[in-house]
Length: 334
Image 1 (cartoon, rainbow, N blue to C red):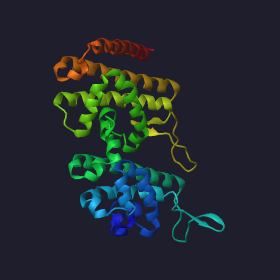
Image 2: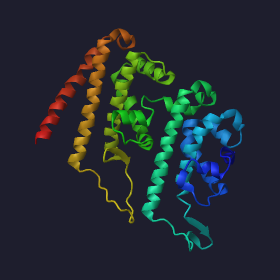
Image 3: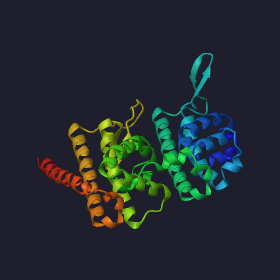
């Protein structure tokens, strides 16, 4: 059924632009499209979507035309990302051979790297747009709302690249979000759940799923998201799964001999300052969250139900933040 998603190869090319403007055939890319759908889209769209793609369920019933339009773009871009890994190589009895003709030469290694990076990044940005669309119209798409993909999408407080960008910087991509997603989950489990009463955390998660918070709860969600972002980036740096490139957080990648750039990881002192900055920023947001909940205690009964211990425990955050602010100023003066 994968070959039925796109009307023809021209329909496919509409979603990748100049990234597929030569004599590309649908028969060549459908097997790779299968891999792209399974690896990148199905985790968020769920098992019914996968069954539809494999012809187990009727497509017109399960995936309405409007949703299909949003699905086509990430699927096309990520298919080209996967296809680019094998497009320039052919297998024969003599082994693997590089494709080259009298009129066309294979791309340089750095051009292949740039092409793949573009398709991967834009494919995930399109996936982000798809998830925004589905979440906004979830009442109309029961096939997604009842899926494991919906549960995966709504399990965290930070769900979109746009939320990472709003709390860190404009150059954060959806693919960077995917790199940090496991770290974001750990931050929620081991920091947020230990900082706020678990009943209140579960209440906030429910609001994040239904999309019906009060104005006060919206403010709390934003502050929780901000703390999660800074803590996740700090932890990601510690795990060396990400690095800073300009104002972006990017995945660590191997260099290649035909690249025209030379990138180096941050120095030890620079990394220390980054880690300290994000720790302080996270604690500042938690301190702000604490003060806001105290000022609006009547709006958050689950926080104070049965005990006032939370008020005392959160004072530790305030003292830690003040001490770290002083430490940072001292370091910057050295």
